[in-house]
Image 1 (tube, rainbow, N blue to C red):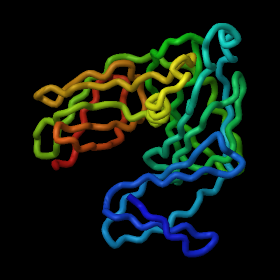
Image 2 (image 1 turned 135 degrees about the vertical axis):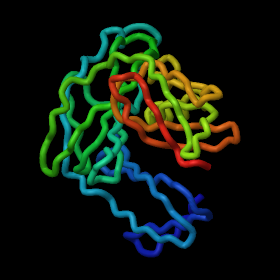
Image 3 (image 1 turned 135 degrees about the horizontal axis):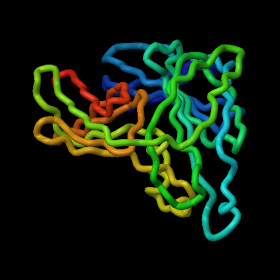
Length: 259
């Protein structure tokens, strides 16, 4: 938990009550359709200055036009966010970007921090109430002062991913393993309070979850290749977040630090 302490008009200071991992969020005035986030690891007594990122990069790409069904029936359009840029393994930018809804057909997203990213999206595909979808990421390098073409965004083909999770001491991990999807996390929070968005078309699909067996193994469905965030929810109630690269082999072996 953080408490705000505003020292000067151009400085926002916050004091945390405990050590741990925090997510700093920031929204740019004039770009309300996207948000920026950064993960911070803080220990007791640490002090960290966080400056807003330089926002002179952009991407452009293509997706399908709005489905014709949107003009008929008791549906409520579609809801975002629909596109996320998370910093890659060797990224110069520590900031991620969550974009609400790119324009149909040809789109351009501006005000992006330069750096290497993994792009994940849930762009509209069918125009129906189907929530099926595969999870994939694409590597993108955003350059300062340039607009990078990311090509055509479409729903990828997913498959079953066999996972094996163990700790460094050889003990198999236990609990529920899921793909962490910040788009679904935002969507889920809206639905918790009751909303007509339950009738939206092309809903954001629920991330796959696997209950690990006694050997730390399980199966995640609907996974394509790419670099993903994963979350392990242990029987003790702990959350372990990690990032892993999913190859075309359809097999993922992960070793986590022993608790």
